[in-house]
Image (cartoon, rainbow, N blue to C red; front, side):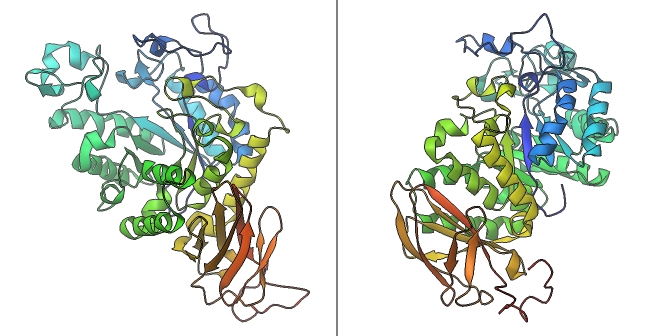
Length: 468
């Protein structure tokens, strides 16, 4: 994960992904989720477990997944497990420590990495640190009373200013982070990174660096600059890009403002910081992407896979799930929708295949393109090799649009076409500009054609002519 190459990720909510066996104490997999005003829905379990993940690794591998991010798996009271009771134990509903070790072995055989959710800002109301007066200094206080995350009364916050707490969680030789990393966890997602703060996020990152090829990805709902600089975090869940994608597709920001903002972010964070960050459209905390983007969802997914970053697919999005936010977005995975006729699944597979085969999308820089029509977005992803360049064109409006894109690219040859990855549509380049019409709610991902009937104007531009 530390290599500055973006990878394709997949978020799993373990209780809702797949159950390896029937359990008497769980809901029927087909039972719809119902929200309770008293929060009782948090205590309903559907029985997904670690062995269930093992059984579906073939599916994830076929989808093109390169890392799995799992929400918490430690012993807790709720189905989401953000209320840890014991950081040293795997929740028995999910399995055992041996099950986790087996999962990690099977994942690594497939060259997939495993990212575990580290919830270090708060614990369960029934955690011994909160219940036992002996650990009173472990709990953050507000006017001598326990402080609760977001004022949620069953999530008391930890007093991270107490070095003993940090010693147990990540700094100590026998810390929680070191224990689980040593048995095979590759990377950590830092829950509530904004609550933990720059200093302590930096401590976690330094601990991981000393252990080897391990990284930290923070849950940050803000501009990422200060979080991915100066060794604070290796990357973030890039909710900033999520917000911008939504604004563009809804017509709340024009294409040139959008493109300039992405360019600014790349300059502030560095391309490496963005490539390690996760491009997200939905998570366990948000409505499903089809609920947000409706018939424009393919445009959002295209941006997720073509803007700088590692695209993270929330489980089930590839199958076309539509639902509202928490808790409805945490429904059981509808495995019956996995078939060759599923348009959504096939679209995702086409995007993951393109991404994995494209050096420009994996590690290339972002370049803003001036467009005469501000309703049309055009940008480049590029490496030093012109044949690897991708030109992305998106029309998020409900009408077809004419445009001229003015590129700053000296290697793009005049009167030779660029070709769309999926449709084969060709557009001729005229002195480093492209003029065309794009249909409503559509996109193109172009690459330069470098040879025509044996002739190539790129013959002395591309020194390595393999695969031209």
